[in-house]
Amino acid sequence: METLLNFTPAFPTFFLMFLLAYLFAFFVVFRNWSPKQKPEASSCLMSLTHGTPAVIMSTRALMNSPTPLSFASPNASFQNFVLEFSIAYFLMDLLHYMVFVPNDLLFIGHHLATLYVFVTCRYVVHHGAVAILVLLFLAEVTSACQNVRSIANLRRADVPLAAKVYEFLSPPFYVFYSVARGVLGTLVVYKMGMFYASGGANNLIPRWAWISWMVVIVVAVMISILWVSNLWIFWFRQRSHRAQKKVK
Image (cartoon, rainbow, N blue to C red; front, top):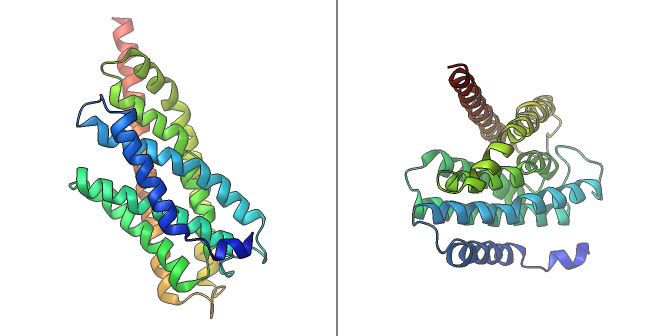
């Protein structure tokens, strides 16, 4: 399997796969949706084809590592395979934002920063995939719930079933996301920082690489925590407002 993967043109194959998934969603699945909703829904459906597979592949890549797991261990072939899978997805989704939502600088910046970390890990440093894949697992383990909720949100104003799905998924998604990124993600980033700062990656990962990775990752985790915190605040305000209306 390892030998086969070395000769597989993984990145262009995966990029084509995500492109076709996006086009299928845009022109077939959501063809009757409004021009404003169609691109976002297509992006969400494409994200579904990345999220859960990325979780499964990351898990396998970490569990079957040919070398002892370390934040500075050399990338194994299948770990590189998973990195290319995600690089292809983030590049395709970046193109979506640049074409349809060019003013969403936060998401564009997020995707550029993520691509920087993944590309340098895969093609420049050749070490550190273990840390990146652990974070990828935590980032994508909530993907299925998040994307179904996002698609439902697009139609909840005019489709009662979509509104029910959105309301049903929101609380568990907030909890799941808070634990995965806010708690476990923060813990992993802390351990990464301590490992790199103590010299654990000396002579394996250049200082410029791990410092820049840490800056990108810390900022991403902080933004994720801020984002889900705002969702919690909005949710509690809605519940409070509904409770007050029932009293009246």
